[in-house]
Amino acid sequence: MTTVTEDVSLQGLRDALGLLKDREEVAVRLLESSARHSFDPDRELDWDAPVEEGKWFWPPELVSLYDTPLWRRMSEEQRMDLARHEAASLASLGIWFEIILMQLLVRHIYDKSVTSAHVRYALTEIADECRHSMMFARMIEKGGAPTYPVTRLNHNLARVLKTVSTTPGSFACTLLGEEILDWMQRLTFPDERVQTLVRGVTRIHVVEEARHVRYAREELRRQMVTAPRWERELTRLSCGEAARVFSIAFVNPAVYTNVGLDRREAVAQVRASGHRREVMQTGAKRLTDFLDDIGVMRGVGRRLWRSSGLLA
Image (tube, rainbow, N blue to C red; front, top):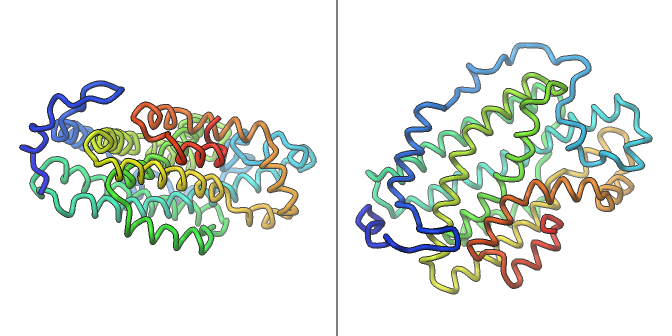
């Protein structure tokens, strides 16, 4: 069982980013931040306010078809409708990731001291993710678009991940699911072109997700130093495969059909879009730089990241 004493025995270990931080000290600071900056979306957001005419559900520059030949042929109304559906698709993907994350966190703390700050923060994060998932679901309903589940294959691949993932793999995949969406949401919540409700949702998520990212980064650094070689190699492979799946699932192709576009043409233009490639790689850069620094981006895993289009 992991205890505070075990952390003390690991003092002095370092990676490319410097000394590893004490696990309990990190958790205490995150718990203090949670006490100061946590939100109840049901109370914080005005769910009864009407949808605002002429406002986007997602910044146009972050819509997958932006600046493609097809985008230039679309009417402004159709572009805004696509943004609404893509916001629902991303929220659906976010709920899927958060449900996976909650299960991985429960597995992570199962054998650890229930009185430790590390476990207490994990439980706090699980509570945050429960609220986020409900918040995203309400946002989808408010926008009037359908939910967009991932494919049956990816849904079942996630079952395997949740069953066999080791601790470093779990936290690497957690960061993949959090950091790219977080980058997009940081551009969304100050954007006055966007629906007030969507801006409120993204603001809450950005504030609370910053703690989740810190927790995952610190734990992944620790695991990549202390885990056996086979586990580090498995992490590189599983993280690369998760990046490949994530890039495919990021926007459900059904959104194009639902706004009256030819799905094949739309998918082809997104894949050929230099703007879209730049958006995704810029959104992933902070994460890929971090993973590279701590030794995750090596070998086959790095090649999978390149094939995903998220790594330049």
